[in-house]
Length: 318
Ligand SMILES: [Mg+2]
Picture 1 (cartoon, rainbow, N blue to C red):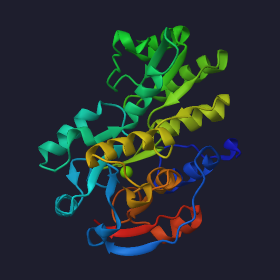
Picture 2 (spheres, helix red, strand yellow):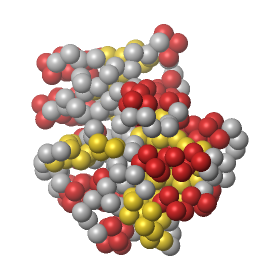
Picture 3 (cartoon, rainbow, N blue to C red):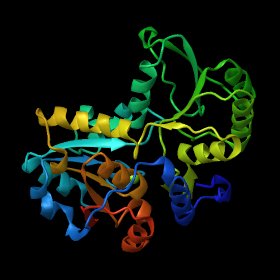
Picture 4 (cartoon, rainbow, N blue to C red):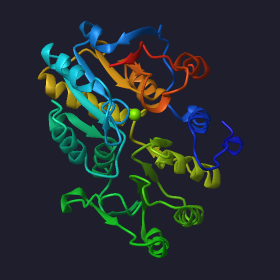
């Protein structure tokens, strides 16, 4: 892996996003072999599963729009008594916000079945030795506001100017989101990390997110930039990494009210490098939804061949 060779120029595109994911494959779980079965509609194959873990963005909704067929699909899932959970990498806000959004849309998704990389990060921080000062980067992300029992103090910069002072005191840095994160913020972070290397946790490993006007740079992108500039390897919590799947699978089994066989559970997502790679490494079946989200407009078969990340199922629609 030669990070210096990676083109981290902005703005991000679909192709550049895939290039960056491919560039850090050595950090990701290894791909598992699969014989991909192309199907038209996932709804017609629900007998194959006892439970499903859905990605949020790109499977349930894209921004303010629901993915076509999601209501009908969720009805069929409920009719068959399949357990259902949602596992999202979004970490800027508490997961209850996503759960409320699904309720508002009238989708039959239990609020406690929705989990995110933010909670995977919280779980990790709560397991740290007590007394640490943790700076949560990105001012637009909601603070973690840990209770006293969490054993760590959260530092927050209210401006780019305050960031250096926060980093000066911090034992570790965590990145929840990148909504307000800027090139100036990044330079301050890189300088502080070079001066005194410290643990750096990334809740959301996504490189980019599709937006109406292009692709936003997400924490996974900034993690690559920091690795390029300082050599510090962050710890990633969200998909494709195991902590997120442990949380998602726990939530799913709670919904089912029983232990589930991982081979009878599928991760359904629109991203090969997060949903599919991580789901199969965790021992789940995987369903790549090709018609929407990250791969929309690309030849999914070609991307699968190029990356060597193969889902068990390739579904054109829900
Ligand atoms: Mg997605």
